[in-house]
Image 1 (cartoon, rainbow, N blue to C red):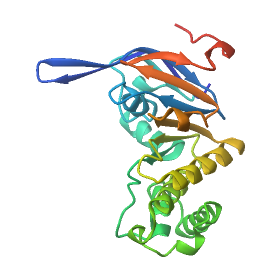
Image 2 (image 1 turned 45 degrees about the vertical axis):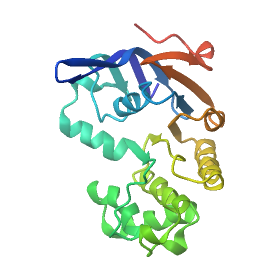
Image 3 (image 1 turned 180 degrees about the horizontal axis):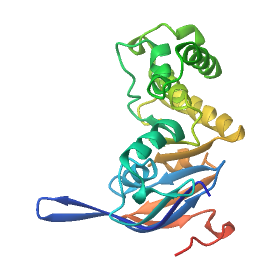
Image 4 (image 1 turned 120 degrees about the vertical axis):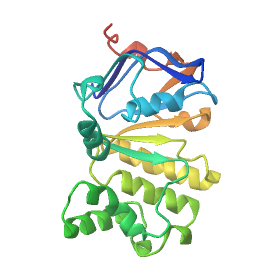
Length: 233
């Protein structure tokens, strides 16, 4: 199992007020799965994604990533995991506006210390894979929303991560561009890539292999749970 949360809770403290964002969530994700985490605004799905992405630590409970207990890892190893093992795709793309498309895709490899020629070769191949090689030297502002999201996906794949975490990846796109992105996700899944996608849209979630529903900080349904071994407690 690539990712395994066992009775994970997350509490945010705002002044003297405690907000329970996740309440004893247990869920496992295997390599090669395409999972949609579905829930309304405020349900805890983004908090769950932050924990899966090692951006936030649980208040209680255990999170195992690739066989390692995340709560015991030092900050430098968490940084390594975020750079090498996890690719992030955001609703707002988060491309650097003054960098070219090619430079944006190279960025994770730059942080990983990959030699420049290898960075360039890999980035051009990824842009070719997402159909944007001819836009390599454009700025993000010269692209459509759908094209920018494809660049973001290419960037997320730069270091050959174990998993892609996507937070509402079609949220800022028109329906046609959104379907193009979902089609790209399907092709990545068919190639063996693990994908976890946050969405509030049931129709988008239906295109994933597995759907995990969250409400009020708890997992309320998992359409593959009956086919999996129980999560250890």
